[in-house]
Structure formats: C-alpha cells, structure tokens
Amino acid sequence: MIKQSKNSHWRYETNLKQREVITITLRPYRSLGNRGYLYLMIGFIGLMFFLSLFFYSMGAWPVIGFLGVEIGLVWFLLKVNYKSSKNFEQISITKNSTFIKKVKWSGAIINFTIESPWIKASCVKSIGTSDKLFLNYHAEQLEIGEFLPTQEKALLANALNNCFKRMRGAC
Image (spheres, rainbow, N blue to C red):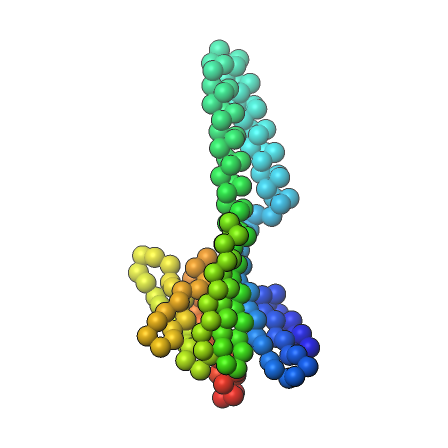
C-alpha cells in the first residue's frame, strides 16, 4: 500500500510482508518553469534586438556582435542552472537500516547505508552561511539536503527524527 502525503516528496510504502518503508525524496526548488524560461528568453532576445537596432542607427554596429554574445551567455548560464535541478536525494528508512542515494546532475550516484537505531537528524545553525542538515550516527555525520532552503532544513530534521522513532517502535 502506498500513501501519498500532502508534500509530494513523501511516500509511505508497506509491502505484503507488512515491512514498512518510509521513502523521502528531496529535490531542488526551481521557481522558473519551462514556459517561464521561454518567455524570459523571448523577452531578453527582443530587448537585445531593439538595442541592436538602436546601436546600428547610431553607427555603433560592432556592438551588435557583443549583444549576440550576451544572449548566448545568458542562455548557457540558464541551461547550466537547469542541469543542477536534476540533483536529488532519496532517503529510505526501514526498521534496521537507512539508505541514502544522492544523484548528481552529471549522473553520478553515491549510496550510503546507516543502521537506523543509531541515527539522528540535526540542523546546525551557522552565521553567514546556510544552515546544514546532518544525519548523525556513531561519531560520524552525513550532510543531506544541501540544496534545500534554510527554513525547510529544520522541518525536515524534525520529520526525519519522527520517522526514526516510528521505525524503532517508540511512536
């Protein structure tokens, strides 16, 4: 049985053997969708077109090439930004183990396995930089959700600790 929570990143699964698995998927937030990207680029190219007409009428026609380079640079930087949105982390919590899968935009996959009875999530506040979310186990730490906004990291730490308690049978 699969239960979808209000947050689209949470999924609770129970298989036929009644072994519960809590799966949490973390994805970076992107406020500009594909349609917004298209409108932004059309507007930017239109602005550069009118600027190039203005400079051409003033006799400064060599500026047109630099405006074209600027369009290419903005397009390239937005594409690089969108590639980073392919990052995601998947945390699967069972009674005995927690599995963390980090997938980078380049396709590199890093897997971690931690024994669930020894794990605790904590959000470390830092001055001048973004807060950090760690999974603490034994004497080690693993940072997760680096791309999440600061306000979500503390909420996620509490939710993860509740999931760990639930899997231990405390709740």
